[in-house]
Image 1 (tube, rainbow, N blue to C red):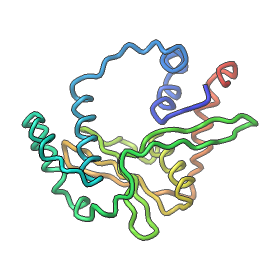
Image 2: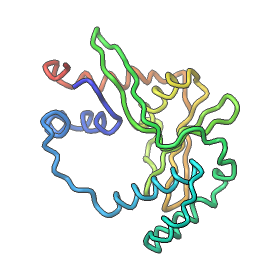
Image 3: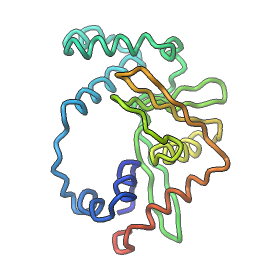
Length: 195
């Protein structure tokens, strides 16, 4: 195992055996619930909108509750400067070295907003924003990788609750050792699984 996402790191941090079963032995039999499927559809619609596609027809075929939710979200202030979104649904892969071992951090930025030299990584959440976002592994991984990809510390992550239309922003902090926080979790994995 040499590629880690924020989600896989969260599982590893909470329970090594669950991580091995799910990500190495691939014994994950969980089906997505309806809320997760709704979240995926809303993510896709927001991405199409940011990219400039006409979403009228697709939107008209969505369930009424999702149409209303999407319309409410797209009226938000952040979409008034839609042209400042430079990426949407952007996959990333960042190579790292730790104790002579190479590994990759991977994930997908829901959207990247650029205002002059400042970058905001938007992460659309179906319902809830993380309770302690500064310590959340997604914030740590995304801020670390974003700073490497865009070669700046003028970067933040903004969690945006689609259902509640609430948001919370976490700025990159020079005081945080993001890489150390990441490798502390990876070090929990027995060496035989680090290939």
